[in-house]
Length: 248
Image 1 (cartoon, rainbow, N blue to C red):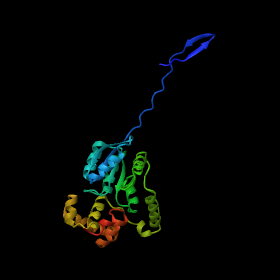
Image 2: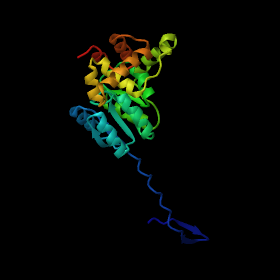
Image 3: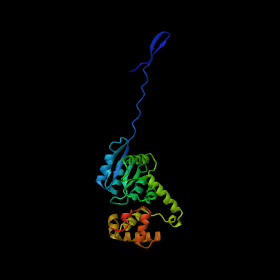
Image 4: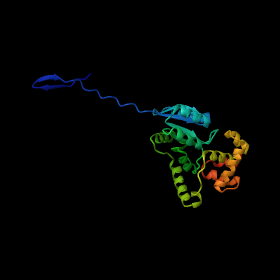
């Protein structure tokens, strides 16, 4: 250990050893749960993040139910989640996770660049959106931003969302749309995707008569009396993408 020497009245004295300066504490890694139903996408993202010391993928999920289960088990810092996986909507899952795991940040992942997604993302409790074709640098920035408590949207999406919200505020008919429950949103998504009552009931594991009741209630609540109108509403509010909105 280094000793500092000084001279006093011609005599050389040895002071106490210098106090070593402690190394800075290692930066805490962001624990990430990666949720996407395409294995190739998950592998590609994992490869992109492999060289980044600040992010650790602690688990993967291939559908919404598995995402919910692993999120509860692992309690990650951030969930990077595809909005359109088998099971309930990613937006519905985000709402559930926000209530159960308020410290976990959710970042929506999607191929769609539907500008209507932005208000729906924020409504669900997710902290942002990143496109699947984003660069590795943008993906890392998005993860770091939501982990730190900020929101993240690409400049293009953020600008379009701002314009859309300004247009909506000027349109009194859109401002008066009543909020939908999570179950109503799930039923509406099924209707807009062209599924029958029986298919929606099977997907949500509830009775067909219950779906019929929800369908009637949705039409009364929104003042819409046909499937086409419900589909347009789902598109305008980011519940489905353009490719999904015209049946199968």
